[in-house]
Image 1 (tube, one colour):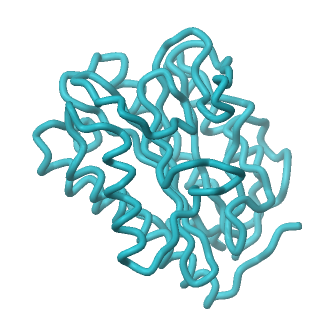
Image 2 (tube, helix red, strand yellow; image 1 turned 120 degrees about the vertical axis):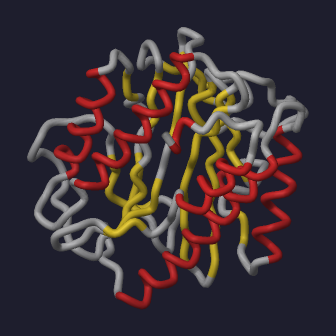
Length: 267
């Protein structure tokens, strides 16, 4: 069942979403070659708890950590570990927060050091696809229309969208209906209504759209070993225009100050 949110509920989802964004901004200030993904996870968990939030992913269906940290050919659900980030890596950091009984969810892909031209373009196109999808999150549109603009933009550049994993509704539960696919046909699928809150999250592969899950039961990788990028916002469907409840602005302020990050997103 799809739940339309009241103004008060949307206010609470915005607060949770902004805490997610602040957490990712803190990650943006700390990420560099040599830091382990587990250290980033510890920093994020402490920050969330110090700000009266609960890490939404930790314990969700058994996931062991606060962040999903997905490096290079890991599409999503990377488990933080002792792996030390290297110059040239792209690192998708997905974060969720529960606060005042409502969830927020967002993801940003960071480009660390001297990344390849392919990775730069991949991140740029994945982020643009998210923006195009958000523009379609308005009253009367359908999920298929939203997914179609994401898919078309990604495939125009020779990349592919993952089909086994989707965005989702969000509110009192981390994952609610509807599924928000990153592909589809215009005017197909669930109709969008003002007051719906959805997480739009293109997962874009540089090569094949095919993926596989590792034996840890979580980590999802590209089947051809090529890199993947992932961007996500929590968004309220509006009558004429979508309202983005999370923000990349404070994340990118930190990217601008961090000399270890390629500032592709700021160009």
